[in-house]
Length: 247
Image (tube, rainbow, N blue to C red; front, side):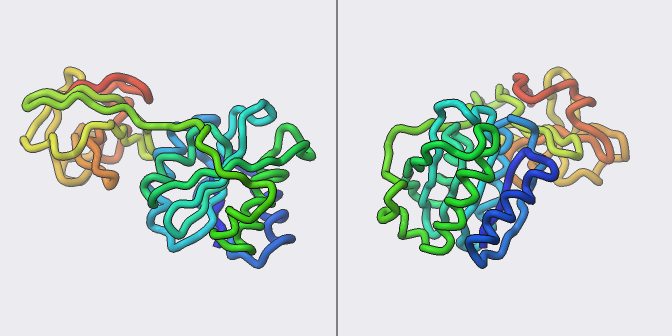
């Protein structure tokens, strides 16, 4: 299969699918096309959380605020998977999660459009890798190994016995505010998050609707939330803000 992920919304993903289907018999699976626009780090976070659940596949990722500039295009082999997308760091966190990444640069010359490399560069490359196999990356003439690429690593929190200082990484569509503080920090029944006290619970429905809570999300990190409400608004935080947790 080939999975597709982007911040395109609609109808642009359909053009990428058309290109792929003209070149391969791949089963196409949409991961998401509503990642926050031009937010490379948010896309990288969610891809790291989602793609490891897939069987071996080629993963086409286009969150590309640098399209049309001199940024490179990459193909990455990692385990039994291949990743195709822009050289802006978006592929690296999930590549490390899937295995030991081998990074290749795609030499694409003059694309048909300087604003739609998803259709003109990445989709054809994903189809070709699907047809030739992941091991073909060494043999394709316009794909060459490289150790010169943009890496992306999430910030590390400062975690002490009674206090942790981290950062808000993403907010999901429910308003759950995901920090980079590991869930193991929550070993008490109540915690103060940026000055607001809230109970530590195993899930959202352990408090009344509208009540704040702190929990460990499915990603394993500390999450600020509200039962049937928005944690980002209730705790007054936004992506990139410092989050200070005190027991």
